[in-house]
Every structure is written in structure tokens, then in C-alpha cells.
Image (cartoon, rainbow, N blue to C red; front, side):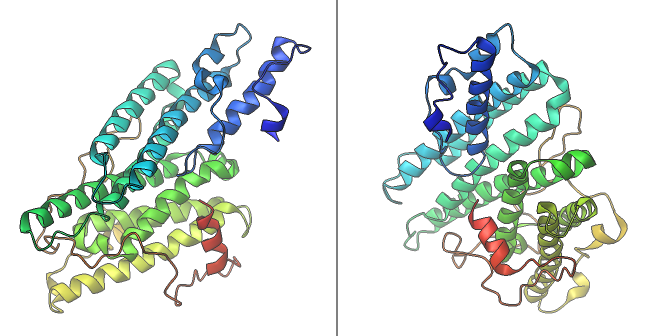
Length: 369
């Protein structure tokens, strides 16, 4: 409808204020359509390319600054996604892009973008960081996907080590970013989270879905040490608590997400204990309690970098160099990351009596992402 109405093109019979109202809708649509992990669904016209100049008008309103800046970041994100997707078409042996470098460049650009936003308006620091975190997770997720598409090493030990290092670095980056998104969600004001639009909940759902994949493929129990796993499950637990408390009804978006996170924390905790028990030959007395953070709220390491300039910066607890004796040295070749799809286990049940959610409902919702 917006394309048919030519909202981005000023109409001669309209005054500046009315034309800016139309253009503001166009910019907002581009911003929302760019929040997915797919290339932008909106055509990039002259207004989109020059969005920063939209704030130069004497009748500019406060929201225009944030909107124009968000569109600028979406353009960079969409261009990065399209470049990676096009590069994937060449196949594993003919890639031209180094996704580690692509991510590092995007990270640098997005961090600079956050700095500009917070200098302009310190009150939006948490929102700017959340937007940038989500964008970085989208790029790092593609890095993860690429790392599992590498050609066969043909038994070459050096190549195997390099591939495993690449996968661990990509996974650590995406895990940290996803946990950062959920931790930021827990810091948002209650009413803001309760009444925010579904497009913002897309941030949180994308992070949760990626972390579910990390747990369901057993990567978490192979790669992450027990203390960090405890923090992982504690984040799910705290996020579920907040979402369930704020849900207005069983059909509310955050009610579905809360139920998903609740079951995810339980599923992940059981899987972690079972996997570590197998590695130690059943000697569970040697294991630390990976659910300790859920029981006594003990201080746990933070697995993400930072949320805003006013929050403490903690070292990453997920590392590509794992020293914990209970963690495998390599991820192994039996992880089928790119062919994985959830809900193969028929026993998955959200167990939320206050909700009618089922596998098909959530699978359809997540597939739409």
C-alpha cells in the first residue's frame, strides 16, 4: 500500500508538514521491515538513502532523529545480509567473503552508531544498544551458518582445528549477543515491555530461538563451562519470570515467549546434566551444580559485552579457548547445524495450563521470523 501511494515522494499540493508525515510513515515502514534476518523488503529510494538529511527540516520533531538513525543502520544491515547471501551462492569451496571480517566491520560500524545515538540523546542508550545487539546477532548467526558449511577436511588435522576454532568463535559471538538481548529485555521498564509492539519482541524471539538451537544441538554442553551454563539457564529463568508476570492474557505475545523460555530453561538444564554425566562415566559428584544460579541467585558471569555506557562491562565467559576439564576440546563433526529444525521431539510440551500454545502455533510464529 505504501509503495502504491508513493509516500516517499512529496506531493505538490501538500504543505511541508503533510509531506513529512507521509515520508515519516515510509521511513518507519523501512525500519520495521528491516528488523528481520532477511534482506529488506522495502525498495531503497532516495529518501531512504538520504534519511539522515530528514532531520534538517525546521519542523523536525523528536522522533525523527531516532527514526532517521535507525533507517541508516538498517541500510547497513540489509546490505551486509544481501552480500552474505549472494556469496553463499558460490558454494563452500568458492566463498569470496571472510565472514569473521564482515562481522568485525559491522560490529565496529554499529558500535560507532550507538555512540552517536547516545551522545545525541543519553536517554535512549538502552534502546540503541538493543537495536545494535540484534543487528550484530543477525550477522554473527550467518557467520555460524557459514562455519558449518565448510568443505570436508579430508582428515587434515590442521584444517580440522581451524574449522573448529572458526565455529567456536562464531558461536561464542552469537551466544553472547543473544544473551545480551535477553538480559537487556529484563532491564526494560514493565510498561514498556508489556505494551511494546510485536516488532520489538522480534528481537527477543530471535535471540531465544538461536539459544534453543545451541542447546538442542548439544553445542552448549560441549562448548560452555558449567558456571556459564548456569548463567545461561538463569537468564532464561529471569526472562520467563518477567514475561509471565507482565502478560495481559494467555494469548499475549509475551505469554507465548515466556512459556517458551520456561520450558527452554528446564529442557536445557536436564540436557546439560545428562550430557556431563555421560562424559564423566556417571560420577556426578565431580560436577558443579549447573542450576545453582536458579536456586540461590548467586553472582554469575555475564556472557555479553555491554548494554550501555552506564552499565558494567564484564569479560566474556564464553570463549573459543575452553580450559574447563568437563568441556570437549572440539565440537565434533556430528553436529548438523544447517539441517536442524526444532520440534522433532514429540515430547516437547510447553506445559502452560494458562495458554493454548502448541507446537504448530510456535513453529509457525518462529518460521515467520
